[in-house]
Length: 74
Image (cartoon, rainbow, N blue to C red; front, top):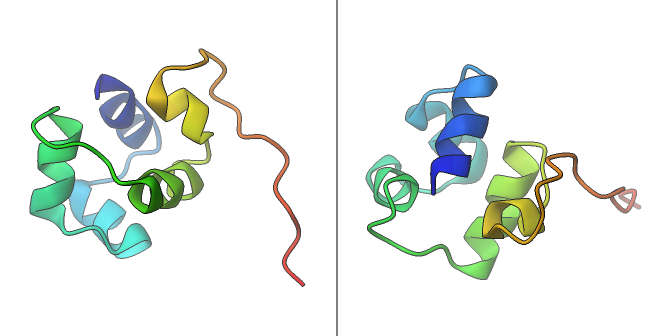
Protein backbone atom coordinates (compact mmCIF):
# COMPACT_ATOMS: atom_id res chain seq x y z
CA UNK A 1 0.00 0.00 0.00
CA UNK A 2 2.64 2.50 -0.98
CA UNK A 3 -0.11 4.81 -2.24
CA UNK A 4 -1.32 5.31 1.32
CA UNK A 5 2.12 6.27 2.53
CA UNK A 6 2.70 8.56 -0.46
CA UNK A 7 -0.60 10.37 0.11
CA UNK A 8 -0.09 10.61 3.87
CA UNK A 9 3.41 12.02 3.53
CA UNK A 10 2.29 14.38 0.76
CA UNK A 11 -0.20 15.87 3.20
CA UNK A 12 2.50 15.95 5.91
CA UNK A 13 0.43 13.73 8.20
CA UNK A 14 1.70 11.25 10.77
CA UNK A 15 0.11 7.87 11.35
CA UNK A 16 -1.28 9.30 14.59
CA UNK A 17 -2.93 12.11 12.62
CA UNK A 18 -4.53 9.49 10.37
CA UNK A 19 -5.79 7.70 13.48
CA UNK A 20 -7.34 10.93 14.72
CA UNK A 21 -9.01 11.62 11.36
CA UNK A 22 -10.31 8.10 10.74
CA UNK A 23 -10.53 6.24 14.04
CA UNK A 24 -8.30 3.49 12.61
CA UNK A 25 -5.84 2.44 15.31
CA UNK A 26 -2.29 3.57 14.49
CA UNK A 27 -0.87 0.04 14.79
CA UNK A 28 -3.56 -1.30 12.42
CA UNK A 29 -2.91 1.58 10.03
CA UNK A 30 0.82 0.84 10.09
CA UNK A 31 0.13 -2.78 9.11
CA UNK A 32 -2.26 -1.64 6.36
CA UNK A 33 0.28 0.86 5.01
CA UNK A 34 3.03 -1.79 4.96
CA UNK A 35 0.79 -4.34 3.23
CA UNK A 36 0.63 -6.75 6.18
CA UNK A 37 -3.12 -6.23 6.62
CA UNK A 38 -5.98 -5.58 4.21
CA UNK A 39 -8.42 -2.70 4.38
CA UNK A 40 -12.08 -3.21 5.12
CA UNK A 41 -14.55 -1.37 2.90
CA UNK A 42 -15.31 1.11 5.69
CA UNK A 43 -11.61 1.74 6.39
CA UNK A 44 -10.99 2.34 2.69
CA UNK A 45 -13.85 4.85 2.63
CA UNK A 46 -12.55 6.64 5.75
CA UNK A 47 -9.02 6.82 4.35
CA UNK A 48 -10.20 8.08 0.96
CA UNK A 49 -12.01 10.93 2.71
CA UNK A 50 -9.13 11.70 5.09
CA UNK A 51 -6.54 11.64 2.28
CA UNK A 52 -8.76 13.51 -0.22
CA UNK A 53 -8.68 10.80 -2.86
CA UNK A 54 -10.95 8.07 -4.22
CA UNK A 55 -11.36 4.48 -3.09
CA UNK A 56 -10.49 3.47 -6.66
CA UNK A 57 -7.12 5.19 -6.34
CA UNK A 58 -6.41 3.44 -3.04
CA UNK A 59 -7.35 0.09 -4.62
CA UNK A 60 -5.07 0.71 -7.60
CA UNK A 61 -7.94 0.80 -10.09
CA UNK A 62 -6.99 4.26 -11.35
CA UNK A 63 -3.94 6.49 -11.34
CA UNK A 64 -6.04 9.64 -10.86
CA UNK A 65 -5.55 10.84 -7.28
CA UNK A 66 -8.36 13.41 -7.26
CA UNK A 67 -11.57 12.28 -5.57
CA UNK A 68 -14.87 12.03 -7.37
CA UNK A 69 -17.34 14.83 -6.65
CA UNK A 70 -18.85 14.03 -3.26
CA UNK A 71 -22.47 14.18 -2.27
CA UNK A 72 -23.32 17.23 -0.19
CA UNK A 73 -24.37 16.59 3.40
CA UNK A 74 -28.04 17.32 4.02
